[in-house]
Image 1 (cartoon, rainbow over the protein chains, first blue to last red):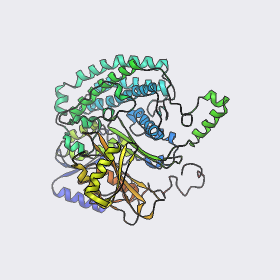
Image 2: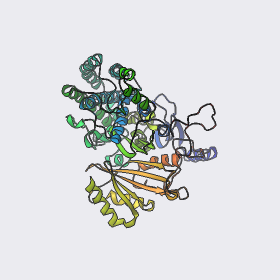
Image 3: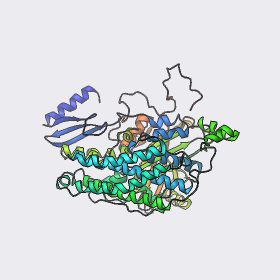
Image 4: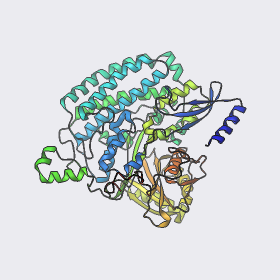
Length: 402
Length: 168
């Protein structure tokens, strides 16, 4: 809208006796760059106009100019709270296009990492709901646990936030002993931290009063809005990509899908809380069943050879050059692959024309899709509930704007 | 999966006749190319279809094929999902630069609202019947549609970089 239109609209709203409040784009309570222009009647929200795109980085266009293996770094920066899930989602899309079967061990290791990422993602979301209701200490307790997850990433790939973990065809290296030690220590300490956190919040009168009934959405509306992940399950629909279309051997594990009833902030909190317990159980099962074997598929055209072979073996040197220059042969085709990301179904729709880069890569970002329901969810609510609704939806700016 | 494609394809053929241009199974996705004028009717039909109820719009995106024949340069791809029977399908419509209008499906799926705005933003596809078709991620007054293939990623005015050997 141009300035005169805005002025006209403002005058119209003020004539009705409402006031306008500009929430964001940089506001300490919104945890990210979200702008909402709210029409307020006292403390009640009448209407909201969300503006998105403040950190738009044109990932889909960037992807059209990058060799396939270089796109992993782009996926890191979407939902940066659970980047390994994004990385592996992209790798699995490529494996589907190339027809690569990844060895069981790599699949199980991926599952362990993806579930660790899910725990880290849910920890942030749930503790921040606590912060927005005024309970800061829970946030500080569980952030210690999140730090442990980041240390595990660090042992495995060297990075903490934007992990660039794994490769097309498998993982780049097996977990070192230090990583295993840290994983075992984490499995020990997380239940205690979660218990402590739940004692603080889940049956806390103030917390319940603040969150029950705040920002509800019915199952029907949630489906119509394309909700997926914990937010959809909180509304009572048991859709989980890990169960509906298992990938990376999720069919081998036994776990429950928690569902809520009302789809309000409290249900979303409880669903995420239970999902962390389930993720922990999946990790334990994966460790118990972990098979021996290689950690990557035998695909020399796609998977980088080990360094010592590159120096001593002609063939490995050729492959190294071909892969690094992005000249690996990729068939023409069209695939869609989705994984259960921290916030829902993270989908990659890839069209390849046989060239060195994707012809088109469309990213199904769950945040972008469900954030459009935000206006509907906060209409008639108080401003403080709107903040809670935003944090309980776990809208990640990086994924929203891509 | 092949017989699912046949099954849905036959029902669509019976109902819409030559509005269904082609059908195929691409990897694990039954894919139907349909005439753009009928897309909303077809989606409504699939929404309450007796075999599968495709009531969940997973994704909607635009694609630009500059090398296609003149009438089919732009495509909109819809992916639908029947969550109960866990069946997915893909619908495609093709359109051209001169007739860039495609009927909006926002009346059926609220999801489509922002996805269509995004597709308009990046490909310039006009969705007729959309309640608020303005750019979403880019500036509203940006005069071009950046995901079209004629716009290079790099700033065309730069002379210090020669990356003709990289990417497309």
